Length: 233
Length: 112
Image (cartoon, rainbow over all chains, first blue to last red; front, side):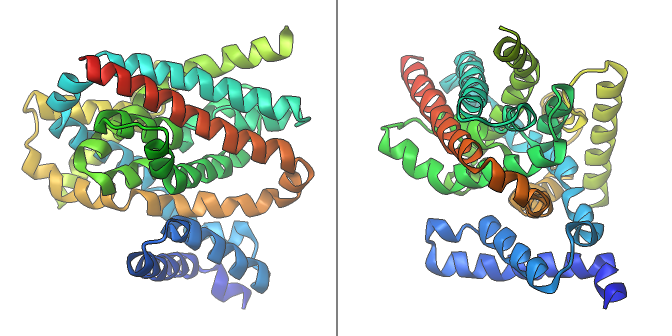
């Protein structure tokens, strides 16, 4: 049994199969809690728990899938190019201001909430950069003494939360512009939010891609400063 | 398709190299994304050469996050022991980012 599930192909096939079914369910019911990423992760966790397969064994194949995050982020440059003029016309330099404010608000609120409610310093460091894309967030966490793989899990959880509740929440608080919608999706919930933003339209997705980059850069610079201020002052 | 993947992986490699050489905390893929926009804008590569591949990758972006998401399983006990601060920070902070970025940009976009 161990040799069979230890074959990387096992977890690759499992992940594709589970996601395939999750997508079918989502397209049939279109209910936001049936978000295919959320359903897939929960299903795979249950399968691993029931069968007693550990994450290390699963990730022998899983890492071949997450490898494609690299090229996929590069590919986001394409819709960004295609919609560049529109973004410039509607948003201009103001998008940079919005994203920087969002970055500071995100880091401060995550770190302070966790710290005030009694989280350990390691966990605070792991949760502070939660809104940016996985490789940036893991790099920041490492720098400030958190646990990079815990950050990866929190980053994915943040992405899912944003994809599931973001569109409804933005509507609720009265955000109307497509640029603002995309920028908020990418700033709060990186690639997973961006995938959701593309479902609304290519402009929303392109702006969201831009937000991943801008917020990644802002957060990489700002997090160590905020972390230092919170713990040294 | 081979052309598209070649462009993407060469840009990813250049992005990684820049990130390493300059020793900056911005990962190679984000630098590569900016490079992709630039090479398309200055017509160094043609849109039609890269679009078939980039469309597939962008459309399935969320799928690639499944394995790191399953990785939460390793930290179940840690998360259980600090459940309230982690969940509160996660939800509260995410909503705040949506509110701030969404509302501020909504104002600025209208004025522009």
